[in-house]
Image (cartoon, rainbow, N blue to C red):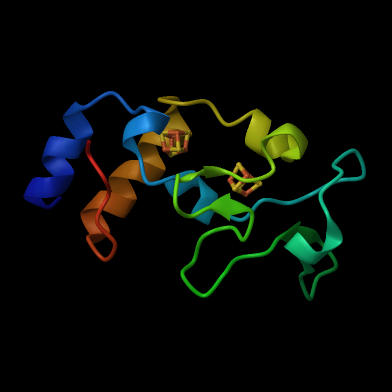
Length: 106
Ligand code: SF4
Ligand code: SF4
């Protein structure tokens, strides 16, 4: 783990101090989700997912404010993603350790 990553691992995860790392993950949509189709893509296997931009983040992310641009209509998977939960902490640690795109630690 990098020095940045070690420091990062000691901090409780907060969305207000995060670069929306979870919005780089693959979000699979289901029939109960109502996301505008132009924000989604179909994988070769047939699953519909949130589309990603060239920067790696979900295209629905408000890049300036680092929050969800479709918050009221965000997919169920995103609603169930728990801040500072095990998965959140895991993806943040991986992202910080990789060091390719620095996490914001404000
Ligand atoms: S849920 Fe976790 S990974 Fe996602 S924005 Fe919040 S702190 Fe970052
Ligand atoms: S829909 Fe919103 S919360 Fe879900 S990955 Fe995209 S930007 Fe993040």
